[in-house]
Length: 160
Image (cartoon, rainbow, N blue to C red; front, side, top):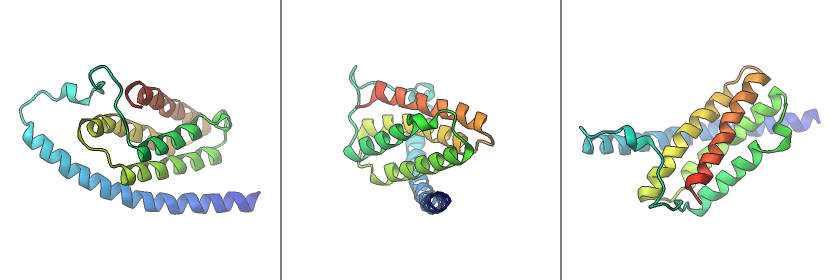
């Protein structure tokens, strides 16, 4: 069992390093995209631009890779084992979420308004998973995980 935990930890760590690089590259690309958007919209009211909106009363469609990665993360955070888990479990889960965020970012082929709306959900989700991964004790991790879980409720309100 200890050997399996060590192997899982090594895989998680390796994935985490790879995802950090992918997330950094993705972030740099999106920063350029958002800088261009900011230049274009300079002087406009940006308060409402951070609020998720439906597509004329309907949910936004997401591409298959996005759907798959979100479903994988959702399944993991709602796993009954996550209730009252220990730090080792929470750290492994945090690594898995980080890995899937990297995959979601690299595999996404969405464009247009649905892509923009997805980012309005994704950025807060990433912040919540980051807070979860930085938890110092099981109580803090459990509390942070509840916020991660809330993200999936919001996702299903706006996306299908």
